[in-house]
Length: 380
Image 1 (cartoon, one colour):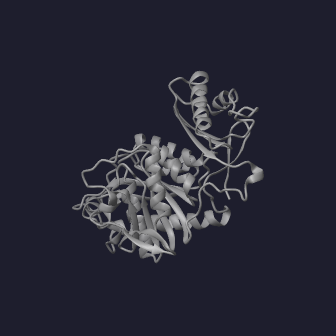
Image 2 (cartoon, rainbow, N blue to C red):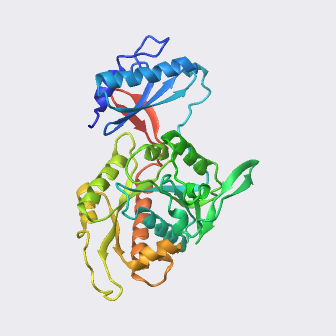
């Protein structure tokens, strides 16, 4: 079931915060409402730090939504305490930029198995070969694969002192700085975390790391659209997003949802473009032949339908799989069709980033500003 945000707002208008006369919406306590299918996230700002008031507000919100909108809705309530306006010294910005990092690009996919991490790794290596300073944040908490793809699975980030504070020093290989939850777990250990714990781990890798000066920080997101995606977009000023898909209809349907997530009014992250991975199969013994196993130009057609740029296509060849398995990204190989494919993809991504930075202001991490019948955000 797809929840209606306006119905949720009306339900929240029926309750009030303890000690306040106005309802939650009218009084400004409800800062944001976001829905994804049968899931809803409600952000509240309360003036009282009292535990019983915060708990009552959370229970009232869940009860109102379950009783007035949908009894099986999955409700998450985030509560932040702020002093009354007269006592505040300065407005607090939700989320902050990382000093020294010029562009943050999220690499996403609607579904798993389309090669999102492979594209991220080769995009990072190609950027580095072009002379850019690059970092990769592996935000795929439950399936981190970036350490394997960069042949650093056995490495561990060191602790360094930066201006009197202890920071994580990213692991580096092939000219790319890398941080991943995979560095802190055993190879056969499953990460069984709820959303808040995963978000906390990501925030540590983002803000407690000594990234230094970077032209690009690529964020390898988990597949789908969920809690981790919201946490990243509320924590970082995302410059733009790259969506990876295969040409087949099942993947395209999910890629369309991925694009829609970034374009949602309450998120509003520019989509730099779509990448078509596994575009065609070329066997080693027949290098000039192309077999369109998953369909032909599906992602390219989708980009035209959605009016977002098409960044390029990556063929399905054996060496691409092998390079990822041995931890040496295919883009490192000189004068190969794969290297040329990733060069074209990277050039297009850089150009779209330049276009985006010329035509749009820097994206501040999602900042809630008003509540007038539906959620609204402001980007700076």
